[in-house]
Length: 416
Image (tube, rainbow, N blue to C red):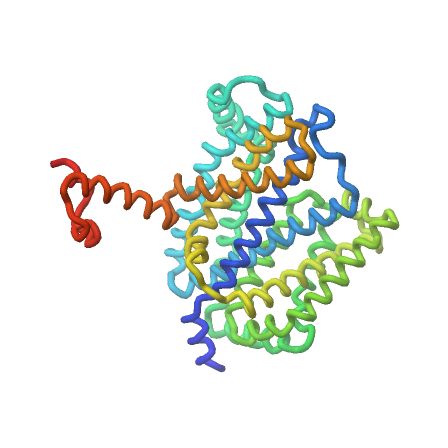
């Protein structure tokens, strides 16, 4: 067994994870901007966009599934890195603090805010925001109104799913760290190193789609949950072995070609009229099962292509990447209520849909970054601004720059 490769891999930070996470976040924000046209102001004509055609609906669904699969895959890869430095207990405590605490805070603070603007725009509530909070918390959240909770949780479901996957997969992840597990990963690496071998990992994904999509067709249902758990485990394994990582790089072109061919084949069926039934009323007909299999292969191929491109060309660090590594989680938490509130004010203006989309997206990105920076105090820019303001105050009180820079002052120095 090649231990030198493992040692070097352990000491190397994989920067492409951060770049790909940023890409997935950008796509999620753009997707949510598009969805605002259908979710807000439903009773009012000429404000929302017309219903998408089947080709556009499938494309939006595909990009959504690709972005979320990438999120879970990167989370699995991060789990591999985390378990090298932490015990199982430490890992669970870290996951609870990082996922459950933001989820609880989001349910209390963000869910009522999101529900208020969404219900108000659709004429389901006409009171004030102050009056809506106790109504939502008392009548919906604390009373366990699961239907309303599901409708209002929006992007926060990702935290619940990720925590659940962390618990479910932890025994297997610990097993794969042992000698027997490493031997199994080594055998998998030898298979995946063959031409096209990495695409064989799509077989379990195809089996889930073929078996369950007709029964659980709704987004975030059991079908998606099992698929995302598989992506989480794939992420854990793919970067755990130098052979698998090498196979990933070599499969970039094959995966990109397969992904393009699969996507083109599916979109061609849009013109035949078959795509509509496959999207909205999946069943166990041979044609629909073929679509589910091809869709899984196409999605996995695009993921492999993105990982290969990222690992080959995007393993480069910069100051922005260091910032994003700390702030990307906060971006995700903050972005949806920002998009929703901006949409509530933009859509009634009845601007051109394309202009509305670009204005909504640009404002959403800017305000999300600003709020994450100012409210959560994670950015170097905010700390620099506060440090500059504090330094100016100290200087006015007679302290010199050397005392400030060497850190020999604290807030009590202002009281003199």
